[in-house]
Image (cartoon, rainbow, N blue to C red; front, side, top):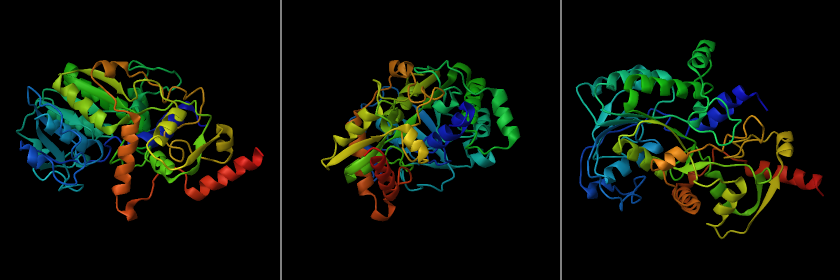
Length: 395
């Protein structure tokens, strides 16, 4: 295993960054009737149709909106009756919300000209994985918006050794961020320091009008990273499934639809402060997660739990080859055991694991066959090779 710093700034970063709206992908919406909002085939269609409308419609700017998290935020906010504006480069999903006005700009080029002269009740920033983007955007928007919600990450925490760590646990310092920048490491390798610095920039500009949400692994239909998706797909395929460890290691995930609703809820409530936000409500183990997923498919399947030392001997990568799981170690034992009670008290709720697993599997099966290639998890032949070696060793 690498050192604590290397683990947090490397493995954790690579695992968490992709699914948190990290690409500059966005769009913009205006008020429209319910019929126009339910465009056929759009991600999120039907998931929020029973949501009650807000008593106080807000004007919300979303920096992001056509990636993974963003569309669910858009669908939920529209169902609540809010008037949305999305800001993006217009390159990804430009037709995703045809009823929506799109303000074009490129955060990588500090191009916010299209936002000039506009104002909003709240901003939700889910597209910034590097601190300079937030440094720029909060300065542009601090006098144009009443509230600013920045989507950070539990990777902002610099120490994963403590089980049950809350929002007040140590995060990467400004000095560590500056050191990472001076060393010339990539944004991916410095994901945690970038997120921690962006949190500070949010509060410097907005003070008590700032909100920071630190999700863990966001999962569910639409997740292009295939983290978590690997498990429903693999279990549905059936047969002998290689499962990591002994089943007792912690796992934390949150459905993208629950996360989207929570973020909109926070701006509606004019919240402030920082929230660790992952789930479920009760502690979940890898065994609980895998057996819970198995309940949504009738395919015959068995789990073979392979201990961590054997997986390490065979160079099985945690998190990417064995999604949702990391090697048990004193320095990372709290990685999937964060305290999210503050977020739950503020309105974060969780749908059943079975719903997330079933919807994810259905979304996967609805994709064109040419696109059904998993980006994470063990390749079938590698899984068979490791299982054969495990059985040979254990008779």
